Length: 444
Ligand SMILES: [Zn+2]
Image (cartoon, rainbow, N blue to C red):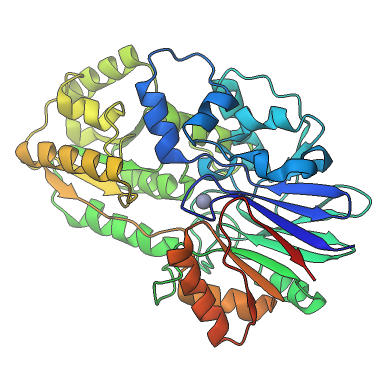
């Protein structure tokens, strides 16, 4: 029995992560993600909000192209996503029907978000979905067991997935960082990674997005401190505090909510996607904001909320809303445009607890939004943020801990993959395979 790899998406450029692993006559697909840039521009151009199909999304390259699987397609027994970011699970509502016999196995938050987005797209999925706790294992077949080793990232329940098979072990670290001071959830399970390393890892598929950055990615605790600095260290009496961040970044949202309460302000979470991710986190017991914060989703309720805030006094509230990338349809852009009756005053604070994801559409949208905000004389706080991705010195620790026989860089194109190759070569690793989408590799 041998291990064979077929890259599907996320190896030629960033986005649409997916890779297939073949062991004997069985295939497991790791991740099934959207290309967010292409998906968003496609969705924005559409007038109707009815269900989209895999075929039309494939035409605009928003979903992974599974044609590369060829004769492997009917051998797929399981689909195992590593975490709930849309570039890892977002294609599942559309692509799962290609693999009707495959079961989906993932951590509880990932399963919960998957159920939510599938319902949102109004798509009926027949594949069985099984949630496995962090640091748990699940037998996919007689020959293959999946293990979900806990790691930190920017969304709860992120795992390094390990496939234990008679042909060897395949480790999938896409995405992760080694944050020893997480503000929510478990620490990375380095002990278990070391044990698996000792048992012998044959293939490591590893993200390389920041392999070129010579540093250890700072802890989420640093982002929490940055937020404290801004929210407590700045004169905000009588002023609005408006914060925007990634809707799925539950740890960050928790810090914002806690700070808001310490400032004796009521916290309101405004926008559909924030409610979606936070409510999913509440359902699986990750956080409990229920009674402390108010969720506001529908347009008419947003109008009412803003009227109430301006009547009672802006200094009594922290508004947490969608729109950190300047998305024209998100709450913040609409507030600035005047779609809602919300008056910005000089000295109001707008905090971007995020970085700009470097694609053209985001850069353009954020430049526009930032300049409109500046024109209103508000105080702008940008980049109050720490990334959830490993940098070079995290990768060094992972490689040393696991000592894989073969390394396949993922989650970026060759420009970043060569930086991982450079690091691995320095550390004495011989078999680094820089692959593009739709390629196969047999591990001898
Ligand atoms: Zn991610």
